[in-house]
Image (cartoon, rainbow, N blue to C red):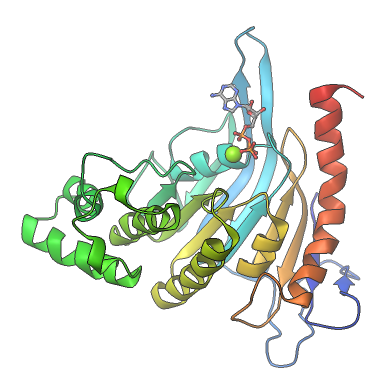
Length: 301
Ligand SMILES: Nc1ncnc2c1ncn2[C@@H]1O[C@H](COP(=O)(O)OP(=O)(O)OP(=O)(O)O)[C@@H](O)[C@H]1O
Ligand SMILES: [Mg+2]
């Protein structure tokens, strides 16, 4: 059973509120108090009793996820953190419909998912851009799969290239771009499909700090402009607090929800803000226990 906590805005020390009783928690900052998403009637994404066991090469089952219960409301920016190997990517693959759980069910807009769909787009860490296509052709590729005619594809690809500030590079090949620019192409390619749900698996992990900060700003702006629902996986707790409205912390394998934090800090935020750092410290303390468990399991005590 997970615990819900609320990280409130700046004070000398970060404040964690444990619910005195079951039910929604209100944030403390005047004017932004709102209930936690658990109180929302129909969730955009609803995971109920999700467990998944892989079969290893030795034939033994490996429990990757155990009894995940999680609702994501429409338009929410949810971040998921957890130690390496706890099943974060597995969870995104399940939501994307790329694999099926061993038990439990996943609903989007109240309906069970049936495989992958262009309403839910997963951005992988290695991006999956095609090096033999130009930037615009990369974006048009998914639109072609979706059945858009050539003219419509061009218009839409240009629109989304403008959104990520890459109009000047539409005819470049991906090897001619920086890492941050490639990341923006992947973002534009996903957004051009106008998904309801954007699933992001450590998308900024390989970037330098300045590029990552810029992309945080852009992602926040795009999220606010498009109103899409984002589920964002990261190792970086500060990044999770910088971006998320809610942070869900998973336990070491088999991953299950250990704790949830509602982040009520005003936007725009910056990763170096003291209140962001303070909130992240609180979460990190809880994550450390799981990282220790993961190290003990991987390397022996
Ligand atoms: N196809 C697979 N077959 C067998 N085991 C798998 C497979 N994919 C993942 N696993 C195992 O499932 C567990 C969870 O993997 P997953 O990739 O979801 O973790 P993660 O939380 O994303 O880790 P990281 O933070 O390192 O990316 C790991 O122990 C991994 O070895
Ligand atoms: Mg992963």
